[in-house]
Image 1: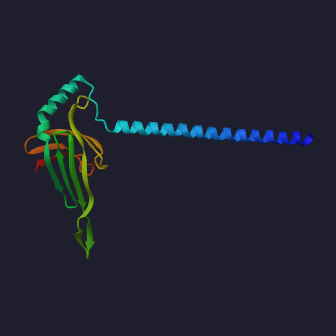
Image 2: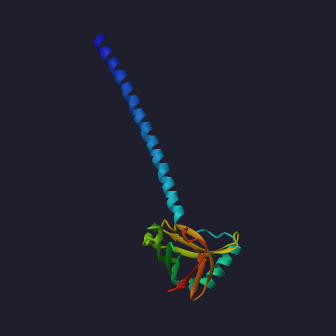
Image 3: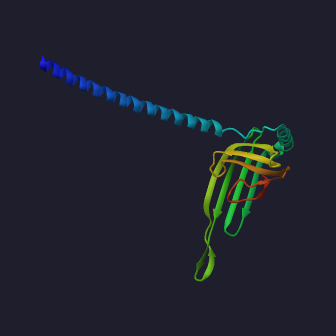
Amino acid sequence: MKKWAYSFARLGKLCYICNIIANYFKLILLMFMKILAYVLFAFSTLLASCHREPIVVNADEIAATKQLNEKYHDLIVGHWHHFSQTELTEVTQEFVFKTDGTYTGHILYRSRQQVMVGGKPVLTDWTKRIDEDLEGQWGLMYSKSQSRNLLHLNSKSHFIGVRVIEFFDANQSKLIIESPLVIESGRIEFTRK
């Protein structure tokens, strides 16, 4: 009887330890599931917020945006080209704006250096730095707070990404906007191709 009581007591301690270990694993699993739920929630929030265009909330902005689109939307639709060159850089930007609010395009950025050869300055050959196709959505809007007409570009390219740039003017032959590229800043003029 004494042996049986001793083994029963040992079994009780063993079950108690097993129970603690099982509860510990349940706690770890619960914490992992909470972390996973937070990560999935954050990821889904990020995805849901990335595809939307800026929202115009002011009634004056809505009316001005509508007028801007009525005046310029059809003029912007088409194939546009911009080329600029300095002694050391060359930038080519092409955009094809479509009526459905999508666009395609291409960016080519080349550079070269001036080096000394035999005591004389010599220019190296051109080197491609950026050669990338673009696609995304576009839209015109008016910002009352900035008192500016804006061109919204939403692209999968990391060179453009989501950019809201100033829109100056458009006609049958020219499109004048703020450059969407960091490498070429300021107001630039595109010609219709």
